[in-house]
Length: 289
Image (tube, rainbow, N blue to C red; front, side):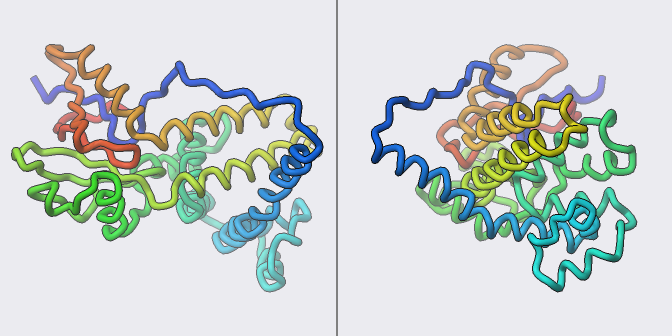
């Protein structure tokens, strides 16, 4: 027989179906109401810089025509506005993939979602977006070292006998490195991208604002509950920011499939696992997802 199938939990964790959302408090006083209103206004102001960055990245990758078509060029500096008149780019799938990659974890994750929807996007775009599953631009090894030191309390050289600087795979929220523990066991170490939580929260606010505008202005999409889609997307991506949830789910699968002749699930090394670092047994096999 060939190699056993591997349940690969390194990049995309299983979802926790028991997670829920808290309820907001009621009965605010006048002062509380003013503070609440101010907090509601501040994100919009704070997000202007990110909104401009998103617009400029899209223009740089050839999507300026979108802003012209929908009269959104006021979001762009004058020079970029002129550049939008060139029209639609060639190689649209690759251009979209590169733009999402540059924009960071939230948009990479959104691209991953789109890559599973051939009923929504044409084949050439789907084919390119599939590359976002595990072939995203990696972040520098110095950031890997810093995150591991912050999370595990010691430098890499004191925690591992070996640690590959080149990532085995890189995805939306983290990247995976091969390593060897002091007991000589081979492991896969997933490390979260720097500033992922703050970037994702900022982008979620922008997506929520965009969903509200679509509800108000784009009546051709009345059949889609865009705000619910954004809400579900936000819950999903927030769960992935704490690697301990993924580790618990992997542990459950590991025990459920223990002794199975054709399925191997990697073991979690809890002493090397924290919210932003996940260390699991390294297994060779066939990736099933």
